Image 1 (tube, helix red, strand yellow):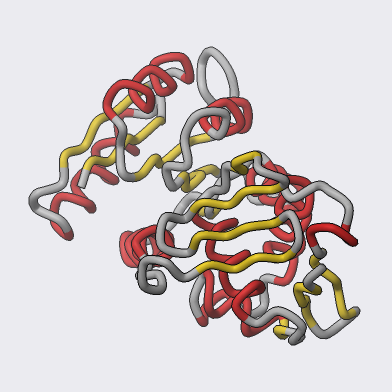
Image 2: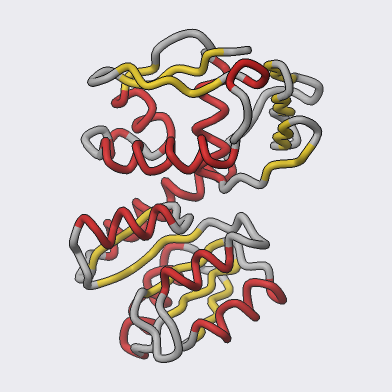
Length: 228
């Protein structure tokens, strides 16, 4: 596994690198101290995971995450001492798959990273299984989503969320069920996470609900996908 750590604090890089090398001895860790260098590494080295600090010398992690999402769906976990709800939500809105506040224990870091990687590597149905709702088409095996013939790029977390909603089209999936299936049982109270990703998913699937279907909120209960 190739891991990119983006942080200008060498102590943080050293500790996180050691944490990963003990858990995954074959892991190849790359580090960047600036946003510009990080973007170059993502494009050139194709890491399997990016750990991204918010405060960087040349830009901020929010901007870097947003730019990564313009060309890559690599899992991104933000690491920051900024622990306000506003920062967490903004990080998720920029496309991060998780947000961990400093200081954190190595056990928490590994658990959260494993959860993100499970979503990315999760097994999907057999080749050939499709879901279609008017102009929306989902090829589960290839992780390809198209709206009116145009391919829509989804992050691993967005892909997993759409998978569960479409597989149970017409049925309300409770908040806790969606959170547990996508992030893990330890996230069942993080309803704000869910709201952010549903909003991002709706934006990416923009179109006429009558022709592609829509994600509907059942207030206080959960969400369901209503097919066209």
